[in-house]
Length: 243
Ligand SMILES: [Zn+2]
Image 1: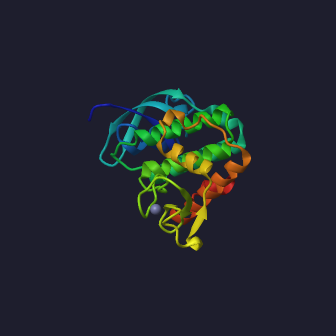
Image 2 (image 1 turned 135 degrees about the vertical axis):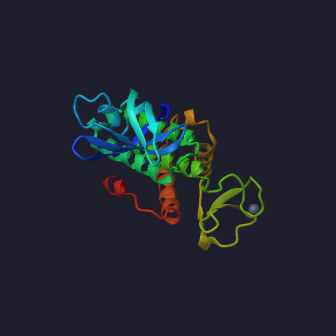
Image 3 (image 1 turned 90 degrees about the vertical axis):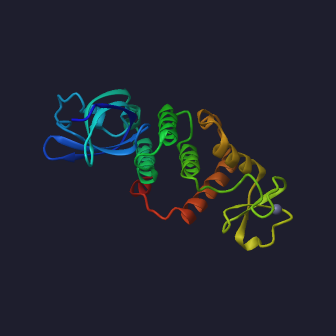
């Protein structure tokens, strides 16, 4: 039998198996996304019962098998159980987990994505921020981690970083005033929104949830993200229809 591994991560999905067991998916710092079996986890007296619910964040002890892992113990640092008391928050939090499960990979470093989920759930649970803003920040930073995101740092045609007022929806980047030729394929972007997009894509992750937006600016950000997401993400997330 292989050695017990200590994996830091969060339960991103959990399914009942048989009468007493669970099959969970964990997003871990050390192994990326992994599928794990939790024997007896549905028995109320099981030490890993609560630790195998979605959102449980902590350290999981597991054996590595041929196709799957087996969780034998866990030390949960945070359950995010404050989310469960708020229907809208739990729907959005479930959407975050579904996105993370869809985009994450096995055996790759997913520490950034794990960090993003943790901070986003903490922001949501704190109730200090508008949940719609948390959603758009989470989505945009997810795109950054995926490596495909809107180019808002320089003109996609000449590379200059000044006088950028329009976003080319086909080329997926900003165009400066001198390069702008086709208004039909571009949309106007305010300087405030440009700054928000640049900030969310480049700031230290700890600062992601450190700002609020006035209604007009939030609406512009919201519309931009909806447009970008619909055009570029070719997947329907089941949990999205509850948002
Ligand atoms: Zn240009």
